[in-house]
Image 1 (cartoon, chains in turn cyan, orange):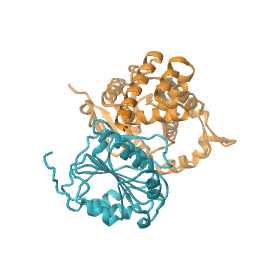
Image 2: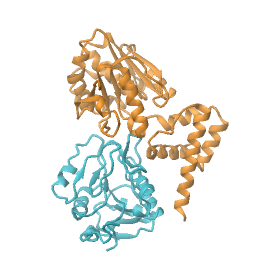
Image 3: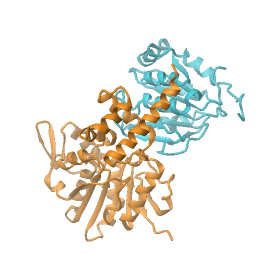
Image 4: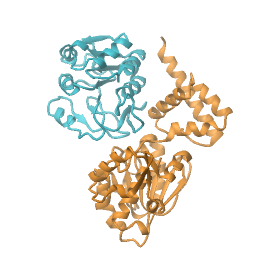
Length: 196
Length: 279
């Protein structure tokens, strides 16, 4: 398998068509995944956030509420909340900001990916899924630059191809694949490096 | 490309910039949350057309007039009137009835930025018949933001969102009564402004401000590190009267600070707490 569960963290970004795509990818994460997972799905600022509770029923990993300065728990999924950018601090705590929109979005995928790339460096996996804008392209670039592993949904399989296309055009991405192929990476990720 | 050494250089440049700001202008950014401060510094660098953070430092050290513009880039937060309507609903049901039992009411909005939330509070007080005996202290680190807050002139296009928020907060009056529209601007009514005292106050370096019944400090802690959040909480605790209230941002928490035992939770959803005496 290409993706090591002993990695530091995983970040996932999605926009239009993302709810369906996130369900497939996040459901595939096994209970012993071992790394924290941070997710940005674009939503309007005052959206009611039902996605985490929807996915809580389907995912093997527990979903944890995002609170500023909370210590990050391994093997938990965190959803960025509408109206706030989600960032990762050096001491591996969550951080929020209400700074202006980035790529017309708050939360922005770039903001999460770039801050996580700095903290987790080569121990970060970044996944960019379907979307109709170009948020995440700079973030995927930052992850690659810091030595992390980059995965982008094959635009021909994406409900909205603009976002994955922008990332692929900007960065030599490590793995371009369908949702099924991406999910298969994690299906049996029982830690080879347990205890490492 | 050797990205890792590059980002170490960036770390060093940021440290030097923060030191330069401290020694030349007295603003202490050493205890700001690192990740968002870094983003703001990089954004400022872009906006001012600098190639490196080192160039910002050089400008800070050589051009006194530059700093006020940089300060705005580093500190102004974006808000809107009645942001998080549910919080205003809870303030009206859980806090204002208690404040109403005092002959005079003092409220401190710490980190008020451009003033949207303090005007929202003034509207709430007016509708509950408390405005005339209330004084609102609105403080911020940034003089430019305070100037805008004091002027009480917002963009007319923001009033649409404000009206929606106001209604979602369960308010029933005509929101249009609180401002007059002119040439694309919305000017807040004098009556609301008259009860607000605007002042510079820096939570990193200044001390207790006044004796107050309620402190509102929303989405400010997210920009501080833990020691600075604790410092601010100490100041709020000292400023509050016994059983005074504290309201913080909807995604902020006292849980990761030393001050959790000093406050009792009144509303989890509203992030409203009440001062408790710990012996």
